[in-house]
Amino acid sequence: MTTAPTPLTPLHRVEAAVIGTSAGGIDALATLLADLPSPWRLPLVAVIHMPERRESRLPEVFAHRLSIPVREAEDKAPVAGGTLYFAPPSYHLSIERSREFSLSCEPPVMWSRPSIDLLMTSAADAYGPLVAGLLLTGANPDGAQGMRHIHHAGGLTAVQDPDEAAVDTMPRAALALHHPDRVLPLRALRTLLMDLNALHAD
Image 1: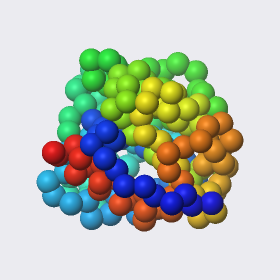
Image 2: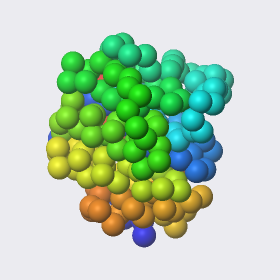
Image 3: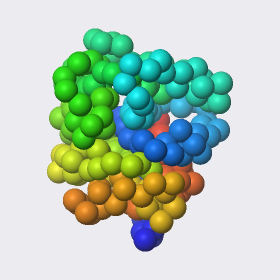
């Protein structure tokens, strides 16, 4: 199912990348973000579905693996470059048009809080064509609507090849809703992320 990757051009320059995943997502994200080069300038914002009211150790776990700052997003804090942010557990995470984070306790979306759809939709509204959305392995359709919103805003969308995903429900739901720019295995998605960071640095 993998699509042949086409070279990026300056027209693909983005100012942020948002990433969504659930079942199998921690291992997938570890592969995607392994050995990020330094300096790293692109902001990365990730939602991984976690059980409600359970303490998250994601920032701590990934801080040990990566050379870039890793933080839990805070309400009204600006989206800083070169940093990996995670949504805090039990809160929806959005990005305002001011490029600041917003947290909320609204009801779950697709049985999930934080919601990938909400993060991606808000990122599309905030960045327009200057955002990339990556959707990885997962066990529910959260993220499909958000990816379509990014696509309609002119952003770049990339989905993990469902034939490779630990759980293929999430990438297949996205493929059923729109035609993403890329359908790639994790290691090729990682290369895409590197290329986007290089364009961001130029």
